[in-house]
Length: 168
Ligand code: NI
Image (tube, rainbow, N blue to C red; front, top):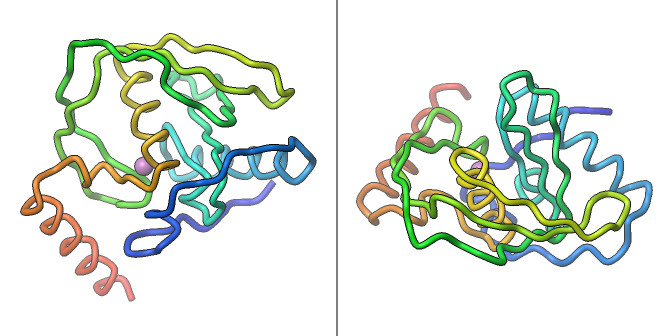
């Protein structure tokens, strides 16, 4: 396994809708292992393939306290969204150090393929539901900042650029 570079805006891959996975091969299994290693090292609770420069519909998530319950999702889609919403602070490994309140459905149901190609569904609420919505957004080229006002979005992007310059 190896750690992957996490892309930041304005990298175009972050804004590009990702392609469906149509074959589960060794390269894809390795990608998921590397994505999990990268996510745990960051540390983060979710990572989508476009964030590591791979424009495929692949997501890894682990919202467990012990960090021992990885979920690998291929071609995930939301098949149900609650009518109720929660607002909570959200971050993103592609926007290090940046946080903002984002409104999300309180509960969702996702369907996806697991790494063996089996169709599965995941009923989620709370943090896992938020994480699923955030990661599936990534597959459609959407960042959490796209849910904010232009003013807040630009403020975060400016802070990110400033932070990158300070480190360079
Ligand atoms: Ni993210």
